[in-house]
Image 1 (cartoon, one colour):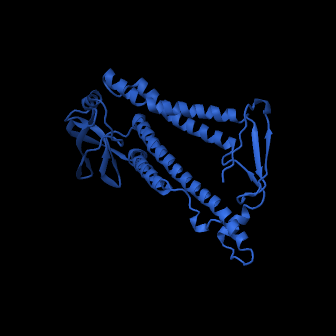
Image 2 (image 1 turned 180 degrees about the vertical axis):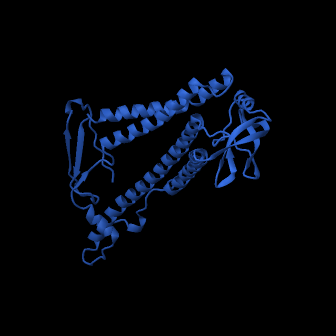
Image 3 (image 1 turned 45 degrees about the vertical axis):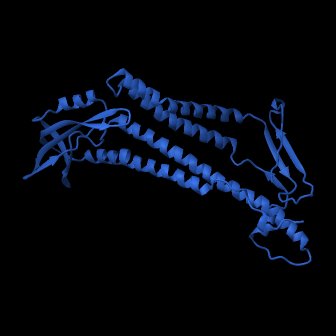
Length: 325
């Protein structure tokens, strides 16, 4: 007995939309962090190149503690006064980038600008209330923010990709279930005309000979793997060189803990390099082409399968063809 079309349902599982929504949260968080920690400070740094200089007096200098779950970081905080025309302003921003580190680094910054020191500060001509003590740009916080953003966006993007694959898989599964049911229903009611809907057109589309092609070519897979390996390891290597030449913490234990923290990122970089090497070797692997006599076959019908292997045939030890419908 032919199975009704309404009973041909795909298997249930975790909805791809939920995965895409969950991954999008990580992507949005990464983009928000990228804007706050990288884009905005960089924009301020570029804008400050055209700011005016004036003399200022340091009125307050102290260390601000930022307590984390496992450690505490320290940041030098200042307050200073300066005059533009006949108006006096008070500024609190030291650099365009706000970051914290070791107590020794914060103390070193405080020793450069003790209370009462007359220094040069920079203010925006269109808005004199916006000012900076230092117009320089530090590479370490910029790389840290880029690395953090890469982790969040990379993880979120991968989850979104998995959700998209789940949606495509369910759609293909539903199509594979509907096509035979539609074909059987059309044969059972051969004496009466059935209206042609979207499912009928889909069935007719796959009814003829079909050549199976890979979803991703070898060159595309190699280019993607090489690009990811280059970006990831490039950022990681620059960050590692900066930490090696100028450790951010004042004691060996903290710097060792920082190195342990980066071990998973180094492992990911090694996997990306391995994936690139593997994709390169796959370019010289044998190429298998598969063709079917029909893409929509009812139960009991025959299906002709043809395959052709080109290049490096001697390297093949075992070839398995599996067709799922």
